[in-house]
Image (cartoon, rainbow, N blue to C red; front, side, top):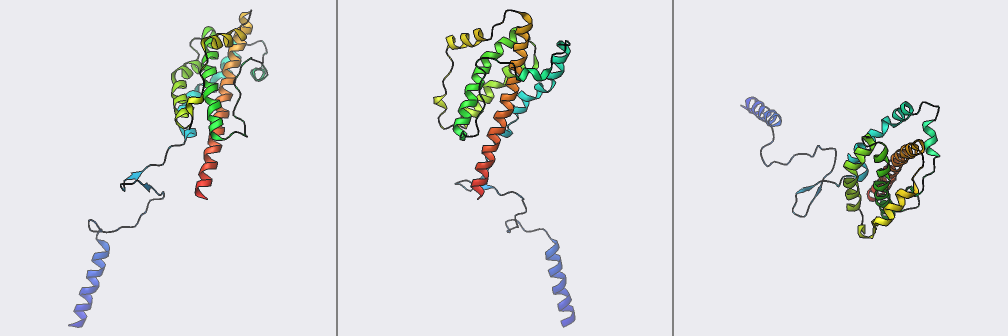
Length: 214
């Protein structure tokens, strides 16, 4: 019965194609991302980029309302953009384009340590400021994350108590008006420092990733 035999074989082939693969059978990898295997064959997740950590948003988020707060307080025509030109001694410098990743991370940690001190001036004027509160809550965590990416985090020197006192003396003002302008300027410069730092890290991480791919 060759006709019935051929029909039977065809039905068996079609049924096998429709059934799910048997346990242990090889299947095609349909994932869009490749995952590296560890020494024991276990999947190892790629390390998270420092620039993508949520802590940046936690600290930068409250800065979005700074301009409205400033303009609501100073209705005498002082422009918010003037804070960019307000000179404050000892404001930490941003990461330069010529720096490698290690030097950039080093500068960021030292800058964050300095801002921790400078923000005490802000606390005297605006103890409930949202930017200040976010910095107090998340700065240590961010510093810890950055140090974790450094090869020589032990080279970061902490400010002595006398250096901290000098930082605050350098920004003392005789009038309430100038003291508050100083506080707002510190907040604005702190925001810029975070934005520049996040961007600098991201650029170096992306460059490192491209080199690894190539």
